[in-house]
Image (cartoon, rainbow, N blue to C red; front, side, top):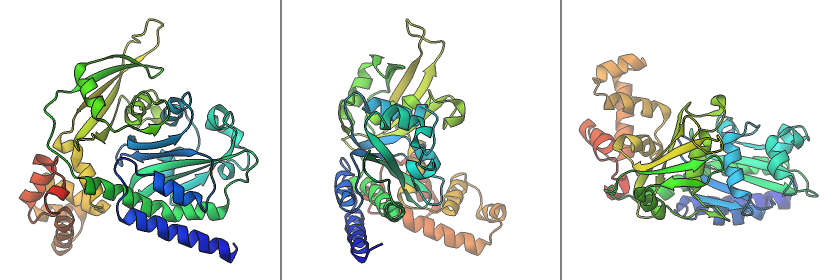
Length: 367
């Protein structure tokens, strides 16, 4: 790599890191990152999405450059069509970046996504990256290159690997800085979707919740990506599903309240033409729904998360130490780290935060 190119990579990395260290904007987290990245890694359009770290389903904050008739198809393809280089697969890789050209040995036509979406749009290669901090994935991006452009280089791949953690940190911080509000008393809402993604029917409560979800930055998207993603997940082949029957994620409204999104397949097929239908439920998140998110937001390690779950079950410290084959002194050190990260000073406060008052985010508690 030429010295001038190394300097450009270094300058872009420093610029993106400084931006992310301030916390990315809650409603539009990706525009500035994409602009800075494009100065050193060329790409044509592409898509960026914030992900729920537990389910890897979309959360508000989608940025997708595509035409009206491609947007829903792109989202559904990710969760419904078996293929190589899915974001869920990348999330488990040591290096969370890959390109279609390299993984297929220069034969992108081996990919269903290439044949049905990328090639018709005039793309030759696609780089995919997940933004991961520790083991928690907070977002992803797919960046295509047009026919006539060279495939992404090893240097491009390495650079995206370097910015994966800073961008994940920026997405995580945006949640913390935004704060949260008490639950809305409105009841759960229900939407019935056809297999083509259109709304067949919906309750008044569903309209209420939909009106409060931030708009995604994508052309012609009739429903939020979070809802389309959850509905598409239950259509996926059993081996590709996060859950065999029910799919769910969490989203935050423009008022700062958390909702739980559930999708479940209706049986038998309910459409007049024999096609299926999917029920999507939007409801205020319960404390137990948000507890894993709070742990991710504060960067607890896998061991600290494990200990936290045991503490919440009310187990004595001697029992926890024995079950984990660690000394009580080591357990005490872990507990101090957990309390410090979550801004509590005792086990009762920990329980109150995660089980009784989890809708109150730490930014409201001086943490």
